[in-house]
Image 1 (spheres, one colour):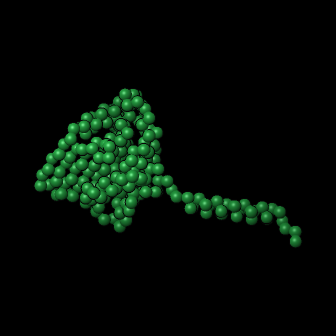
Image 2 (cartoon, one colour):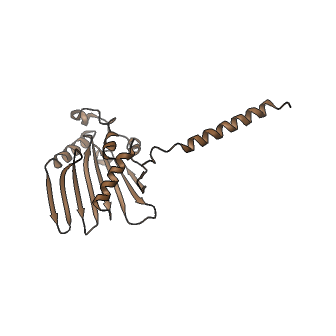
Image 3 (cartoon, one colour):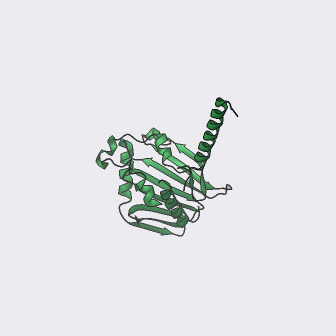
Length: 202
């Protein structure tokens, strides 16, 4: 009846590790979950708690910090490509992520996030805020562009029927310039993507 105590300890540790791995595998990945526009804006509260007047004195987010703000999956679309540091030569911290549906069709959406911290970034965001201030609308046979207030924020919408392109641009939390661009994605679906992103950063 006597059993080797070391053998019992090894069995116990092996069982405990197995249970821990099973528990961890059931925990959903934060970056892999799917977000709304209000929750998306709320997710930047930690970074936008500074006075806008001193924003040019703030240090822009690092590539790793920006990457953490970008969801891996939005609705049925998964991230296929990410570009970090594409504006660093201008002194602006930024990231572009591109999403496609499974199957690799031509439909895709890109999201560009630019940080308005620092001297150059602050100038960029202030210029964008000025651009978005007046109501504006232009229509043609190819499409339209307009600036208006949507859910409490000033936004720019562009739609081109010939190139099958759509675009939404706004300033988030007084600090981040966010631009969504769709290829073969109608405007209502692009807005659905934006709202899904906002739900994703809880």
